[in-house]
Image (cartoon, rainbow, N blue to C red; front, side, top):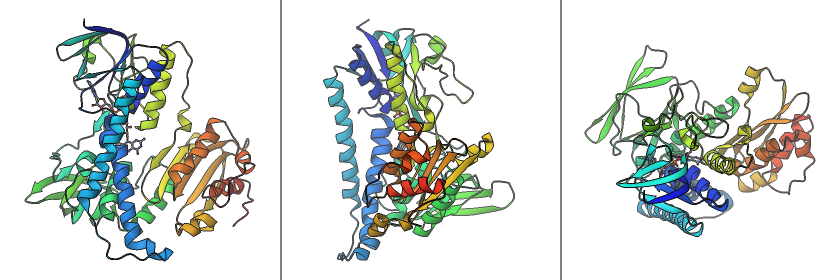
Length: 463
Ligand SMILES: Cc1cc2nc3c(=O)[nH]c(=O)nc-3n(C[C@H](O)[C@H](O)[C@H](O)COP(=O)(O)OP(=O)(O)OC[C@H]3O[C@@H](n4cnc5c(N)ncnc54)[C@H](O)[C@@H]3O)c2cc1C
């Protein structure tokens, strides 16, 4: 044994690194094992951060092309320097991952470089080194889900990782999967000039979000130029010459179609990653979907071995992994902890942004819960008009009897930032009346939230 720890975290994504820092704050001697050359996991290296860098940069490009003129700002010929855009993204990633390295040093967390394998309870092996530890926290995240029969080469048929590093703008791109990642990265390349077709097996995009939001998103993104083929499955995709030949079929069977694309982005979801972790050495159990099974303390069936983040059940979101990391180590330290999963927002960073928290209308109907709906459009908001960004609406769902906010759904400019107010409302068990009685600065986009809350009671002011 080389060194012994109170806690070894395996994986340095937002779940793992945040848990490591919180554990160090609580006085534990902590190490974090990471197999990749930089800290930060999927989120910082090939997920949230680089995708948002490209989304922001491509938004600016489209703004210069199409919307600055509305504000009386005239520019000369608008050009695209893709290498500079990519270099900006790379720098943002580098700064963020270096930031975690700094935080590890500050909190005296040892970064063990290499792949961690659980050799026994209380023992993690990395290469030829063995480390003893009182507790192990698995935070090994997820990987892109493959589609049988389609081989990813990260050149012509890419996952999100390849789609973040294309060296030129493809003429045509097919995105397999109308979920968050497909729509975000599809938007990036569509804005930069590609003709993008999103193929979705189900009859709607963003299938887990509120139906009205999905419908509106499809309409708005469609107007921007994204094309959609719903209820359609891709039966094969093969690299041929400098492109990909695809075969499609109606999801229900029947009609067939062929398509050609320069680039295919496979974005049908992500699956837990546990390869080489050594779960079989100690008998850690998985659930029916190959996620690590845990109890209410994030402990696996093996005492002293815990798991959080994408590798367990629940939404695959960075902030969900962070919350779990914090609560898991606080409970290890003897504190009590709790996560209200209904108060965890989900955001799609297209433009307009799409954001949700709590229950959807479909979920409430299925559960037989009586609810009231309040809706307000951005087109009636002064600030949105000033921004010339008036598409979308906010919708609040409140319990019909108690008025408690049960869910909130926004599509519109900065929806991802605006949803925080409603996550807080749900966390504090607020009523829609509580929101109406809270002063909202004027003129702000958040007044749309206040008006939607007033609309729950049938009394919006500005419509
Ligand atoms: C393109 C894209 C965009 C996304 N955008 C967003 C977004 O905007 N907002 C959001 O909330 N979420 C987003 N996500 C999802 C988000 O990235 C994940 O939910 C989050 O990273 C999960 O965190 P985690 O700590 O569980 O695992 P990860 O971030 O996946 O980190 C796991 C780490 O464990 C390491 N590891 C695995 N096995 C071992 C081992 N045996 N030994 C050592 N190290 C190991 C891996 O190398 C990795 O670094 C996005 C994902 C993608 C792919």
